[in-house]
Length: 233
Image (cartoon, rainbow, N blue to C red):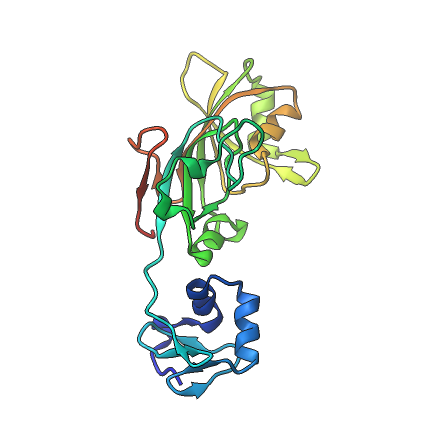
């Protein structure tokens, strides 16, 4: 059985899911069927392992897994965050090298939006970046179709706007002193088209939505359409 310190370990089902390319449920099924051995012993659900442990599935050793990959992509407008093209709209997977085709998006940007999109094969990282309880701040540049009234700014920032899936409260900062159309929008949620729906509910259309920050990651000078590997923050 594994004997490493707890801070060096991870759940066996996660380890199996990553290496075998299966779901964690399927990994649990393999463990329940006693098809998995760690360091010569049959293990049970909840076991933990490290890369130093010898893991066998159906008596076949698992090779040491590669490291997780974290990718930042500067998504242009007009691309969808799916593996399949939707109508005439290409997929973001056409922008990245083939070696990254196994990565999944960490959250999404709709086809009309641009900016920072993270991708990874680390499911725990995706959960930590997207679940509201982890409070990962996201920052956007938003341009409206007409000037935002001060009263509406206060409604959104101070009280929130009630949407069909719950209240939406956004932090708004003017991008310049001369325009009330252009705003920095800061939020920690990530519900489907939340920013667009929030403004639409009080009569504004979003002409441009561009994400510049997601948690500790920023778009910086990454050119549009390009990607780069990043480290786990």
